[in-house]
Image (cartoon, rainbow, N blue to C red; front, side, top):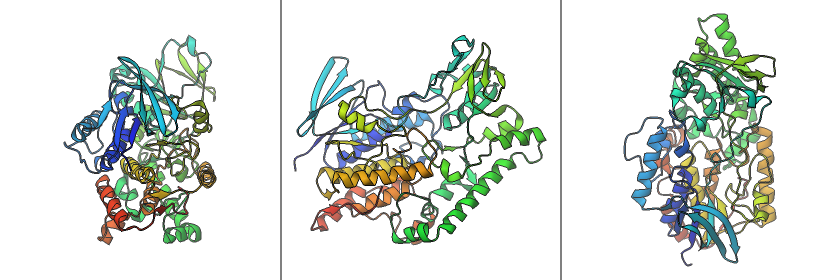
Length: 508
């Protein structure tokens, strides 16, 4: 089969990981990036941002960090890593090349793009969109009275320097990672912070009963307890279908521990401090918050609430007056800055032909794809990185290796109608078991282990990456390096096969 030429749209971590796997498989991969910098969301991140995950779980599987980053790497460190990865593998990254539209051809696409020299078009056999869930489309609702507000209304991407907060009265709206970061960073600048949110969310603590959260959540021993739309083995299916009381009991225990640790911040404090903490305790199940926008709670957030340097308000924004933000519960909070950290809207695909764009943008909680990669009705096109999960880079790499098998016609997929049925099953499950977010249907989030395992089994590659050490397989946390060599293992498996692979009868 002749080498395929593949265009990747987006030079963030997903686009770079995708290009590397395509390169290993012998495809020609070209990355188009509209901005002058690679890095995707990391290139526009606010000062002081850190990765929620830890560095051993966030790198290309065959390119460990070439320098020692922080345990939770900074945005600057991640950008440095991505630059060094691109240089090391000599990936074809074209900055300031904005893809304008894709023109469908019988055997691929004509990619129309714009750079400093004008508009151009190049033919490609296949296109992969790696534009990310959090690149464009800020959720910025208009509130009554905001034009008369004498202060500034902004979002976290408008914060170029933390000195902006120094000594100010700051209202932060939202309860995702960026909102919590903004509250903590503003408080560190001697600001009086008012934190406003419609619904408090469960935050993953850095340590759970003294154990780092990655050791508590990322070993297979615990990841098999994660509820999911599909379970990869008969044992896991038995556990989740016939022994549900064990699974529910496990998550009730985790919820109780997280609630206990939250309230423990108020031990020995006055009633006012305890009342502030009580405002932050969710009434819904923790599992509902294990989604893309689920956050690792900043270490200082709850202590700052106890101290009264961050004041929480469980309400919604009603509007603005000249010098205050108005809440639906009737409170008026004087402020100089209002930071609206309300997340991102549903991802869009403006470069697709209208008939395909309608398919991709039809749902308000994001596009659901077969294997979180393909739309059954859009030929020669896939999406990478929307299978976002807590082990994001391995998820992208395994997904791309699966795409390589598909591109070489080495795996037989079901007919479009069956793929659409699978998509609908997963969409319904997510809507019942995960709180709404604009990228709910796109992501795999904390179901990363089930997702990766199914794709690897489908390719004839072992999902048990730490074997033959059974103790490590069960109790050690998984890291990005565990997925090194999946291409080589796939090739060895392919050499032994006498028939094409077939999609497993599992929805994912």
